[in-house]
Length: 131
Image (cartoon, rainbow, N blue to C red; front, side, top):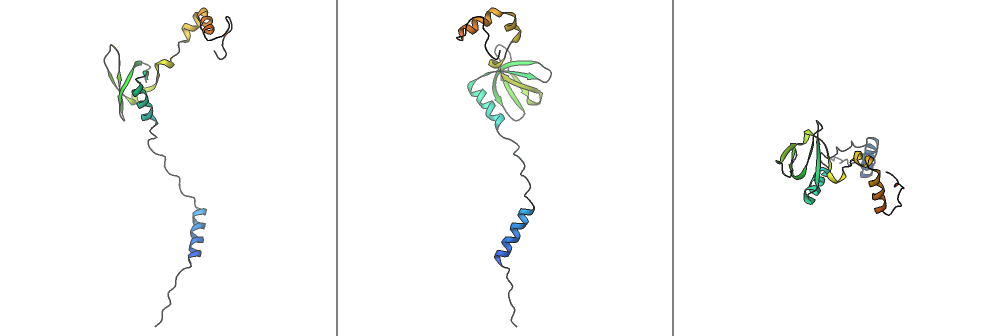
């Protein structure tokens, strides 16, 4: 008895696979759970010991330096006050203390605006662009 071995043609198989993959696009990959942007930001602020302002969900502002953090909380070092361990879900947002602006004091004293403008190389009486 002679049996004939039937083998598929490789070119035909490649064509079939190519047509199947082109017809049904692969499902999108799920994005990673962590991008490490948060840990990069915390590490940068911790290493430079940047004074930070942490605003809680209830509007309370806490000032200090981030000493330590993990997945659920961060430790805020404060001067002349007890250190705090804050749960991250209670934090509304945080920012650098140097980025804080106080619009009420600048609008009350127009002379200080002129002095500041002169120190920046401008002429007295002219306000800077974007103020």
